[in-house]
Length: 495
Image 1 (cartoon, rainbow, N blue to C red):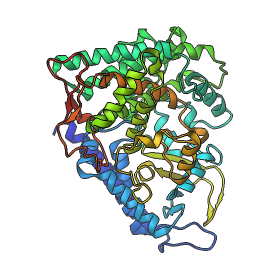
Image 2: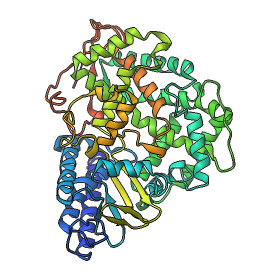
Image 3: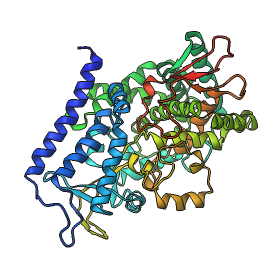
Image 4: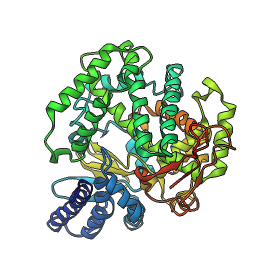
């Protein structure tokens, strides 16, 4: 049995074990579903088991901190995410607005079922709904034990402010755009030149170029070839997938954080490290513990970019619109590309790179249906809200227009159904705008401006059917064929 099959079986075993444990625990839990006076609705045993099998097990088997490619491929073939969305719809139809409590005697756990409650949890984070849930602390402490996401006040305040200042979360375009765009162009040219040589642009080629670009943006050109630091975080994220079930690799973590600190001390001009050196810090900041989350987020952004390329390949009219936008935004004007940004956002809506948003209540909270106890874990299953066809006509279609509306209209829209690819509220990802800038420019570099040269035509029509896009898209098996006689960067079709 090779490593590929062992990983698949291991992930499957994890999901199965979780279901069996849940079954055993629930048979000892209070039995009847429903609501006692003053209490939130509680799921029955069979419904809780179905949730564990259809939603929780596949989500965690795919890998929450770093994806397991074999399981992602299986999830696409079996439409596991679509099945999970269907399960959530059944729970909402049966139990109403919720929040829905799960009858687990060793863990108070709630599942959010309505947009109104999702918005409340996100708007009222980190207090009384803390982002530093037990599960998140167990996972992220493997590589960023003092990261802002798993910190409590007052340390969290200093760390969050540092992230916001360096990443400039309130600015649509980072002030270092004139330094970053040439880096994107250079790396796009490199990876597409390699793709032309080998006849195709596959995930490995793209990801190598994307990760190199990220290292240059975060640390500077000196880190361009530092594959070691990328390998370190990959290894740490693999064990983080197991959270508290895997011992920490403290030696590797220490070397990784020290390597980051070396780049921060160097503060190469033109990098985020240089920006970090210029913003106020305190003893609580621990900057080298904040940077791993940037690398983590940029990895997900690469997945979204590659899937966005597939979306444009399957939608020629939208690809033509994207190219027209590129032609109308030459040079430095590419810093803000609304349509290409919306394409990346649609990739994240359709296939969220953060499928589970976790919170934990710091005190008892009152809801329409009753009281949620202190210390309750809260799950927002992002695909359910992003692709609920009971609320969204375009749930399974490519609809970039969702993201091209006036901010006030978007706010009202979000109240109807939350589209939260970067979370929302006070704990929203502070790198949101920086990520959208870099991903949209990279996507533009991949498709090019010339309609005559860059015709993207899906070679497997059934995989990305525009009328009903798949519930899961395995980015690891996507590839874009490059014509042998094309200019560098010309992509023609994918399979």
